Amino acid sequence: MKPESKKVHGLDFMFAVACFIQASSLLSSFFVSITRQDSWVIVLFALIICCPVVWVYARLIESFPSKNLFGILQTVYGKYLGNFFCGLYVLFFFILTSLNLSDLSEFVKATIMPQTPLVVLSITFLMTSAWAVYVGGLRQMVKYGFLMTMICLLIVIATIILTMNLMDFENFLPTMDLQPKKYVQATNIVVTIPFAEVIIFLMTTNHVQTGKHGFFPIIFGGVVIGCITILLVIMRDIAVLGNTISLFSMPSFETLRMVSVTQTLSRMEIVFAFILIALLFFKVTWLYYVTVISAKQVLRFQDHRRLILLIGALAVTSGFILYPNSLAHNESGQKIVPLVWPIFEIILPLVTLIIAKFRGMTHKRQTGSENQSGSSESKSAAAPQSGSGSQSGSKSPSGSGKQSDSKSPSDSKEQGDSKSQPKSGSSSGAKQGRDSQSQSRPKSSGSGSYRSQSV
Picture 1 (tube, rainbow, N blue to C red):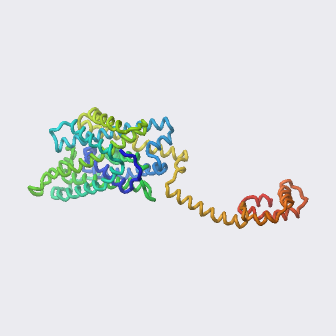
Picture 2: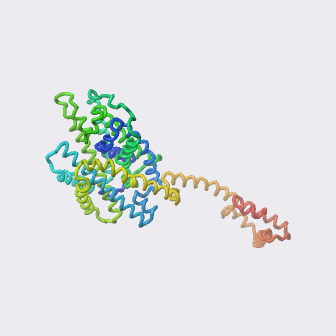
Picture 3: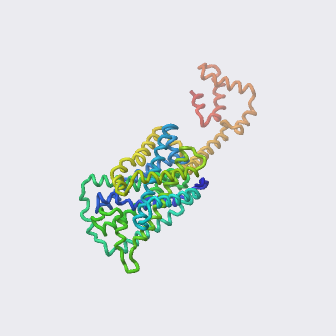
């Protein structure tokens, strides 16, 4: 994990977000068992709800452009309360890392290596991710996002074409025929687990270079690309499997098992398995990286190498303690996670933005382009003012030099007396006062002194 000296391009960051969400296509079993043939509608509902959530993220990090999520929490809530929230987020990131590592290990065991012990797979993937976190950095991680995103989209489109003869579009009927609470529950699951987990990217936004449009199109663009991928996968599975989609723990894998173009082009599920393993490995590595840098920031570690191994060992151990099997994980994803995760993904960022708004913190910090435009406007506004001051002689040595040469000490004394006469209200020396006011009018142009003298 190298310190970042250069900014990451916004497009690379966007495809990293898309790749992160695409890896969650394996978790479609959390909500397809609830809404079945209407699961594709749930994805669209979740995308609409996710739009204001992403706006909150973008507005929050744009208000504090030089800080990540933990820096924003410490600035808004202070030292003690801010560190408390940062500690909770470290625990949240750590649990996400442990759960996704377990998902990756269980998927490999169920599809490719069924005889290999689960602990061996977890340690192998963790050590590989630890090496990537140790030797790499943010720029090295995001530069593979575009390639992996495009490969995933191409494979999904290819599998749709290959399963076209197996599709029955009547499987989408009837539409919107379930109870409303099921739609609410499934939408909450999709918003919470795949989409709103992009809050983890707020820990690295201070190293991202954006254009004049800000962070919203970057983050939301990645969410849209990931949403399109998940939508295509779910619609393909519904068209092929129908209502039996709720019977499988991995519907996409079962769909691709049915593909058989020729004798040589069969068992296409292995292709999907490899790309999904690559996506899950990217997601686990990113979560691992963010967990390490967040724990380092909270605990103020100087050497992150010992922290990498410590967090990795705890992640492997906690993965077996939290959910001993896939059924417990599936039940937690439907009942517990949708109630707890929104506290970290939606409620706390929204409350932080509102508090920063009321305390005036959102107006104190601007982007670099706004600062440059503001300084240029102030310079252009000051240029005519200084030019008029040089012509009128207001507070300018060059403008008042000619007059000061012709004035004697007695004239300056008379001018001072004439300025004190209107304040005292005396009527003597009116002619001398008018002469002194006519001389002092050019000096007070552009200011409020002439008005007070005339009164």
